[in-house]
Image (cartoon, rainbow, N blue to C red; front, side):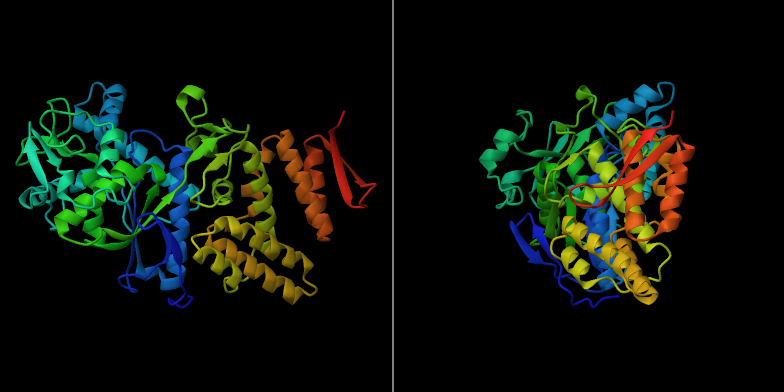
Length: 487
C-alpha cells in the first residue's frame, strides 16, 4: 500500500476547479455514485460511470487500504418506467409482484455486466425500495427525511404531494451554475397551481390503486426520484461525505436537488465535498437512440455480435472506455474496440504470470491527476516495450511485473489465460478486423523474438484458411505481413 499522504487531485463540479482530495477521515474515505434505474438492461452509456468510478475506487483502496474505503452505488427500483415495464411483461401478476420480478432480473443483470467489465463490487448496493419507510435498524429513510424538511420549512404539502421549496435554500443552483430564473426556464416541470414556485420539485406523490405505494403521513404514495439518493447516501456514508459521482446529465436537476434536500434536512454546509461527473457517450459519431437503431446495451456487447460483428471481452470494453479522459465526450466505435483488443492482448501477454512489482510511480501520478486514464495508455505502451527490450531474464521478469501491477491497478489484467479469453471471438470465425489483429500480434511477437507465439498464431490462422506472406517494406525495411484466404 502506498502512503496515504499521496495527493489525489480531482475536478470538483461544485467549484469548477481541480482540488486535492482531503478525506474527512483517512480511515474511512467515502464515495457515493448514482447507479441505474433498473427498468431495462443497462446501456453502454451507463457503463461509463461504472468503469470510471471503479478506477477511482481501486486507486483509493491502493492509497488508503481496502478496509479504509466505503463505496456506495445505489439501484433505483421504483420508477414510472419500471411500472410500465412490469405491466407489459407480467400483465397477469399483481403490480408490486410484477415490479419485483422486473427489477430483480434487471438489477442482477446490471451487477453481472459490471463484474464482466472488470469492476469490483461496491461495499454497498442499496435498493431504493428498502429505504422508503422507517427502518428497524434506524438508518435514514425517505419518509423521515421528508418529514424533517417539512418541519424545517423547506417543504410543504399541497394537492396530495409534498414539494421542496427551492427558494428556501439561498444558494440553490450553485452546483449546476444556474440561477433560479434559468432553472425555471429549463426545468421542464409543469407549472401547477398548487406549487409555490414552478421550480419546486416533488418529494412525495400520490399513488393510484394500480401503482406501487407506501403508507405515509401524506397518504399512500411513492417518493420522488431525488429524495432516494439523499436517504441512501446518508444511510451508509453519513450526512457529509467525500465524493459524489455520476454522469454529466445528472448535474441538473438530480444532483442539484439531492444537494438541496440533504443540506437542508441535516443543516450541513455540504452534502459531499467533491462532486465528479463523467462526460457523454455517442456511438459512431451519433447520439445513442433507439430511433437511430444504435442503442446498445452492455449485454449486447458481451453476448451478441450486434456491434462490430463480434462479441467483446469485458476488459476490452473497459480499456476502450478509459482511452478518453472521463470528463471528455467519448465516441464509441468498432474501430476503437478492435484497436483496444490488440493492445490488451499484447499487454496481458507481456505481463502474463509475472510476479507483481510495485505500481510504477509514473502511472500512479497520472491517475492521481484527476484520473488521467487516457495518459496511462502511453505509460502502458512504454512498460510493455520495456518488457520486450529487457536484456536479461531477470530484467524481463521485473519489467513484466511492473506492467502487471499497472494493469491490475486499473482493472485491465486478466488473471486467466489472456490468449483464450481476449481472442475467443476470433476462434469463433475470423472477420477482417480479427485477422488483422492476429497478424499485428504476430508481428509484435516476431519483433520481440517470441517465435513460439508467432508460430502459434500463424498455425491458428492457417487452420482457419488464412495464408500469411512476410515481406520487407521497400522504403523503411521494416517487416510486414499480408494475408489472403487459401484457395
